[in-house]
Amino acid sequence: MTEPMVRAESVCKNFGALHVLKGVTLDIGRGEVLCMVGPSGSGKSTFLRCINHLEQVNGGRLYVDGELVGYRERGGKLHELRPKEAAKQRREVGMVFQHFNLFPHRTVLENIIEAPVHVKKVKKDEALKRAKDLLSQVGLSAKADAYPAQLSGGQQQRVAIARALAMSPKLMLFDEPTSALDPELVGEVLAVMKNLASEGMTMVVVTHEMGFAREVADKLVFMDGGVIVESGNPREVMANPKHERTKAFLSKVM
Image (cartoon, rainbow, N blue to C red):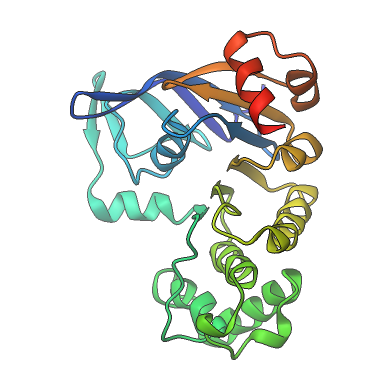
């Protein structure tokens, strides 16, 4: 059996008295695209943030590529990694947020090479070559010297994807990457994501784009109230949901 790229075992996350994740267990295979859907507040984005230790779990275990995320286990006890070690783990995981988080005072190229040069110590000319290749991949070669304010939302999100890919991650996380975009700009971002999926990138996508989930995902997970209510083949889940909560949700979004 090949080790899954992501393994979640009874993952719990609380914010004070609020229990946001209530024992999430899930495997995501290498090269698999998993889409997570569900109402706001169901725990989807929190689960994504736990995968790269932007949030600490309060219970259970999370593994990426066979490695325990955020902790070291000794004698059955978990010891949190030092910030430097956790940051090193995080480099392996690309994350694209709802809002693009680009540096406004840097050009598109400068945004993309920042982390490889300063974090991974990649030589600048090498980082520039890779950045130009990535800009070509996301259809933005002509915008290399533009600043974020000169780009549309869809273009900024494509730059954010290129920036994440510049670190050569083994896994990409997308937290509602199109929800802040005008409807006519959504397609250009989804096209880049479809291309990534076709190249075999392991992806976890929190999304409301049901058409994308149906077409691209290998697995669809419906979350509500901090638990996985239903999961399976996207077309099957959408056409024939087994749970009432899934039916009620899908009837509103499809």
